Image 1 (cartoon, rainbow, N blue to C red):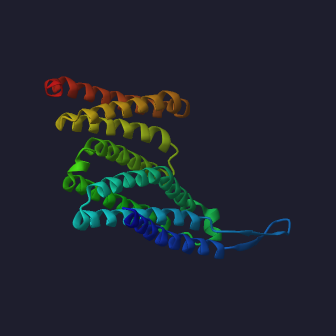
Image 2: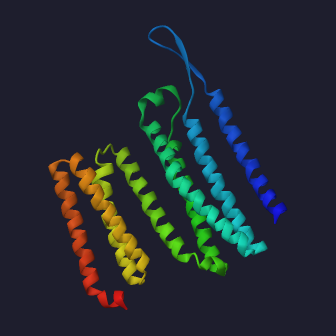
Image 3: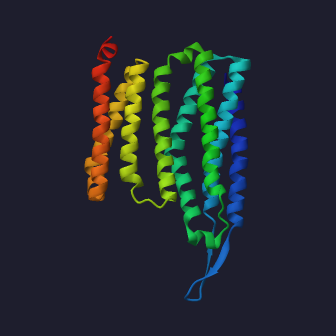
Length: 272
């Protein structure tokens, strides 16, 4: 196993380093001299290039892991390698959710900022790169799903994959909501919008959990709704005006009534 592992790591690191070097060279060449009001000259760099480097490395990682998984499914068909690739893909996606989405948010801020626009060329690609990365992320998740179907040993991880996929979708959609509300110059993106969206998402999880008889989805739904209520009482109330508070309380109240109705109507199926 040693030689194939070393080969795979070397192959990944080689192209990864090439991508990193390319963007670092662009960053070093982006130096610009500006004159301060006091007459001194200072040098600045285009920090967006470092952010692009980070996103491109995530895209490359998604692509490499996906192709390696396809090669294993069609040619090698090694169960242990399949499990390793499956777990590595989850770790990579997790870091993308934490770091990658934040970096994409910074690129959006650069696109919306007139100060940066005056110094460097900032275009629509600062926003478009977001959806390119989402495309590769989706492709990797689809390949993970196919891996579970073809490699029985990964089938045992189905429950964890469903939970991970559900949380990933919630995370990405929440980021997308903030993204568009920020573009629309809405100050309530982290408060009113997210709270209502999380409540609706919880309702969808409850309905799906009842329909497919998946207990873990129903439990996750209540966890998400619980976090929504905690956010509502400890964060939203102190920042929202009276009208916004009324909207979010009424909306979440209606969602709770619908969830209660579903549990009362389908309690026999749930307890079966």
